[in-house]
Length: 537
Image (tube, rainbow, N blue to C red):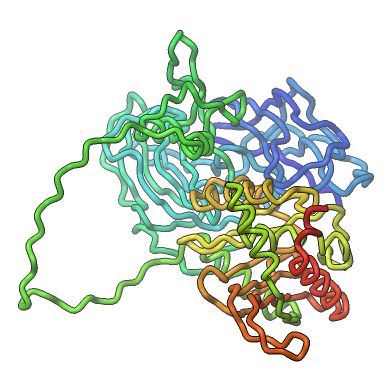
């Protein structure tokens, strides 16, 4: 069924938006998190991004045309699908809806702010926790970038907000002074609730009515992870580069660049109209651009505590991170909801280890895990019956082979995806795996880099784990758990010999994959790893 993309509400005062430019045309394939159009608001130009995969079926609001908040501006759906009659922009609304619509299909690069509460009796404006996706119910304040009494400019970052995938910034939609902070750092609050109050420019900081007590961290399970929005800002506060050229950048990007000593004028922006956003700064730093080393301060002398002052350490508790909540929610749904079955075999890895050593001698960075990823991709290509997923009552047969890599983070787990891994060489896979893993640990991945995928590889061999089983990563239908490569005594031609062995366990969704299919896949995988020259062709 075609899904409408609705005009989002980006500020408390916004009643309509104007499409500046469509970045996709009718018939184009669209991925979740991909920019669809550039939108002009009363504050700045932002991007509208897709929440779902599909094809752009119809555009209702053309370039340089406006539509009220909440009105459909386009439709996304399956290729060739027809949009029902009557798919036209809704009539102009008198005011924006006070809350996010039930199931919007698009998101914007800036956080979607619900309509602001009316100014309080003291003339103050409530800053509400924005909704970053249709399924988001709460958010956690990581850090306040302003303190009470600070002057605030429209478009300026106020705080960092934690989502399940990355940290985003909350920006001010009005000029004024930060009068009160309601939700402190490391505290959570539901979408739409006030997190702070702003005294408007020219207004008097009157005594505020007593706000509700600061919300306690919400312990309820989080919803399915939304695709994170990227930061956006108005061009009014852009820094000036050498030669007089103005650089458009988000406040958070400017702050990080300043803190790290990075010349922001040298960074290529990926946001709307070339704005530099947080991920651009992090990618520039990851490429080797570093701040000048600061002179280390002399460490304070530590006084050894006496035996009398040493106390037993007490237990501490902390709220679940947004990422960990989503993991808990999804695993609770998947494990009892998906009928798993498991297949295990041992693989002789002597030849694969030798290939890795030869590559290392040639100063090529190829790991055993890279060999496994390539072998998995080729095995999937040769046995496409395992390259499926279940969506409703439809079995989707994927045309490409995209392999997910489980990456452990301090906050939980994420699976960046190597696209078209079956067509890439070992060196290309190795480079991409390292880059994606590094950016994953910095929480800088884009939605299209961790969504989708044919199958996931979870490797705990580097931790010395011999064997384990993994839980399927939905909507995928299989996941491969890989243990350590270790010397073992095995029988060969009636003789006891020592070989480098590795255990691989395949978890499958028995609703659409049968045991014989999984067994054929594992047999092909073992053949590729035991004869790794086949990975080169």
